[in-house]
Image (cartoon, rainbow, N blue to C red):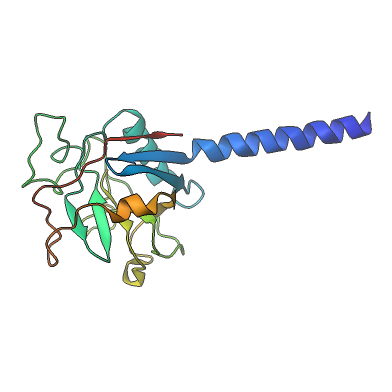
Amino acid sequence: MKNFIYLFIIFFSLLTTKTFAQKNIMILKLSYGEVEIQLFPDKAPNHVKRFKELAESGKYDGVVFHRVIEGFMAQTGDVKFGNTNNSNFNLSLAGTGGSDLPNLKAEFTGVAHTRGILSAARSADPDSANSQFFICFDSAPHLDRQYSVFGKVIKGMEYVDMIKKGDPRTGAVPNPDKIISLKSK
């Protein structure tokens, strides 16, 4: 009987661990392919919650990568002005908007900005992150402990690398790629 109880506990633990892990995996569909993202709720719980909330409600679907700098990062997530599916879409304003939800307080951690990291974009105010985020193409140590890291690409980074690059100085992209869909796995 004791062995049965131990086996049950082990089985239940494995099942709940897998379920928990899958709840924190997102699929970012680009025209080039699907990208798997592992979220870090233990590091930035409020940013993860917001990201999932906006993704699950379809707010990120159709949003352009408005600022993309070769060797640095690809920025997206302006659900107000950057969503091609909305009447408010305005490429010249993309990057200046957010969602209707309140801004988030910074959740800085020791997680380094390395290749594939997702981090919250913000203004000069550390507590101004809202809906925008970026994915690092390469290491960016100058961003460490300055921006809230909340996830990492674990599969499909080659598709992120294919995102159209913008002006080398500003990152502005005249004919940007967009998020086809963003959902939980």
